[in-house]
Length: 239
Image (cartoon, rainbow, N blue to C red; front, top):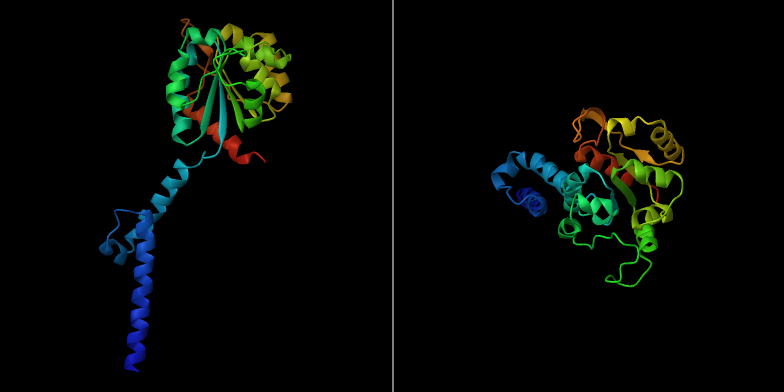
């Protein structure tokens, strides 16, 4: 009947309007014209993908260990990238790393205090290397010097960074950076193999022009690739 037809038509229009309002919640620049042409479907998919990417590290804690290497300055962009992905980023530095980049840089980028001294009296009371080790979802060492790789491989814990790595049960990701001769040294290669056998993951250095003037293997991989490896670990990690 005519009344039944009009009722179905209004119900259909009402459902379309509700659907439009829901999509508008996610996609602010959608119009009724777009909706009628199904353009909104593509815009909605893009918007939801962007939101998912932005929030992908929300609730995750990343410990970023910075060691004494000329590549340390590059880690500022890595810390910033992780923070933009809504990760809770904590930076730990070796004493030598502070000669290449100021801790204040990381504190500004992450909003957290950058830790160097295991016995920092100006920080809130707690056994920091243990509490951070427990809190971490992933521990990243970038750049990782030959010295720190050797320490971790042999269980040496004599500063904030190495004690935290020793105490954590979280996955560890290492991005080495050093001179070609050091990287190819048999002792360093053995230390890398030892850590790999224990489940430590590596983003291997690439060949290129080094700060010392040499050309060869030892250059730290791009920070974007290091960040991708960290994300992969976080989303394959079993809680």
